[in-house]
Image (cartoon, rainbow, N blue to C red; front, side, top):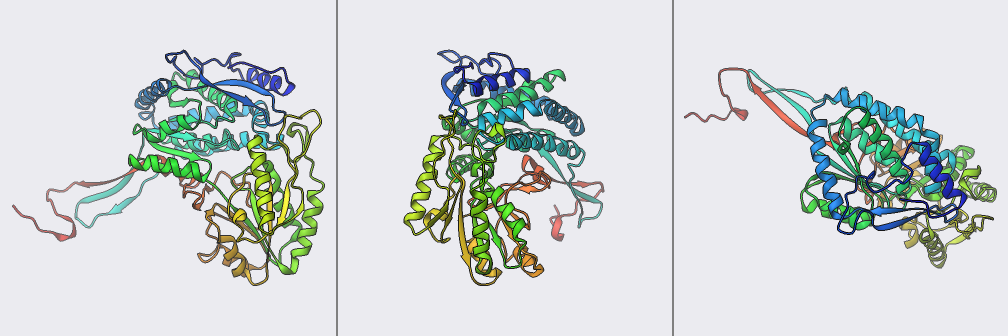
Length: 522
C-alpha cells in the first residue's frame, strides 16, 4: 500500500499512520495476506478521502488463498486463546484500550480524513473504542450462568457459556473502527477469535486499528490470528458469509446487504448479528422543550452529514408547535458551516459521489411526490476542496406515506411531518416504516413519555425521551427491530451473542430418577 497523491490531506493521512507506528509501506505481508498466483495485492482498491478526493493509497484485495490462510491462523489461535482464563483475556483487552488511548488523536484524525467526519466525531469514535475496552475488561469477570433447582432429588442443574470459535465482522464506512471494537472486544473476552472485513471505502483506519491491536498481541507473545484483517469488497464478504468455519457473522450496513448475508449464513445454519438500516424519527409534542428538541434534531439530522444509522430522518411535530419548530430549524440550518471537517466546520462531506447522487435523487423524488423543500438541497462547492463531496443539509415538508420517506437515504435529508391528534397518532406515524432502529420523543408530559415507552409505543430497539435518536452510549445494547435486523451489540448482555449456552445436570446420588416422574425399569 503506497501513497499516490501529493495532496495535503493524503500526506497528513500517511503522517498519522507513521505516527501510530505503522510500517511506511503498509505492505501486503503486514496485512497478513499471502501471495496468490499473481503475487500479493490483487485487484487493488483506490482509497480516496471524501474531503478533497485525494487518493490516499491502493489497498490490496485479498485473494481466496489469502482468506483461507487467515482462517487457518484464526483456528490455530483459537486453540490458544480459548484456553486462557477470561480475566486474563480481559487483561489483553485492557492493554488494547490503553494503546488506543495513546493513539487517540492520530487515529481520530485519520477517521476524519478517510470517512469525512468532523474532528470531534472522529475523536469520539476512538473514545467509543476505548470505552468498550473498559466495559469488556469488567465483563471478563462477569460471564455469569444460572443455577436451577432440579425436580429430581440429589441432582443439580446449571447453565454455562462457551465461546463459539471464529467470529466474522463486516463493518461499514460510517463507523469504520468503533463497530469492530463493539464486536471484537466482547467476542475476545468470551474466548473467540475474530476476522474482520472492513468497508472497502475506509480500509486505512482499519489497518491502523488492526496494527495497534496486533502489536499488543505480539508484545504478550500471543498469536496474531486472535485478530485477523483482510480487505476487499462484496466478493470477499461473501466468502465469510458462506464459510462454515465462521460460527457467527456480525454485519453492519444496508438492509440489502444484511438480507444477502443473513440468507447465506442461514443456508449453512450459522449465526448472524445484523445491524442494518434505520429510518429514525423524533416526535415533538405540544409540551416539549422546543430549544432542546431543535438542538437534538439538528445534531441528529445533520451530524456526520446524515451518515449514521441512527440519523434523524423524520421529524413528527404536533400542529400546535409545527410552525415554531419549522422556523427555528430553517434558521439554524442556514447557519450550518459546511466544509473541511478538520477545520471546525459542523458538516463535512458525504463519503463519495454515489452518495451525492442518492441525495439528489431522493430530494427530486420527494418533491415529485408532493414534498416541499424548505432549505438546503444543493451541492456545495468548497474552495480548495473541489474533489470533495459536499452538500447542504435539507429539510423537506412531506407525508410519511411518500415512497421516498419510507426508504433510508444515507444523507442529510430531514422530512418534516405534521400530526394533529394525540401521542398515539404520532407514534403510529413513527412506527409506520419498515425499519426499527432508533426513536425519540420530546415531551414534558409524563403520560406521553410513558405511552411512548410502553409496549404500545415505539417499536424500535432504541427509544429515548428528551434525547435525540443519535449518540448511543456503549453501556446499553445497541440494535433494532424489523428490517434493522434484530441484532444487539455493545453493552448490557450483548456478550451472549458471542457464546453458546449449555445446560448441565449433575446426579450426585445413587439412583437414576427420570424427569416428569417417568418410570422405565429394566
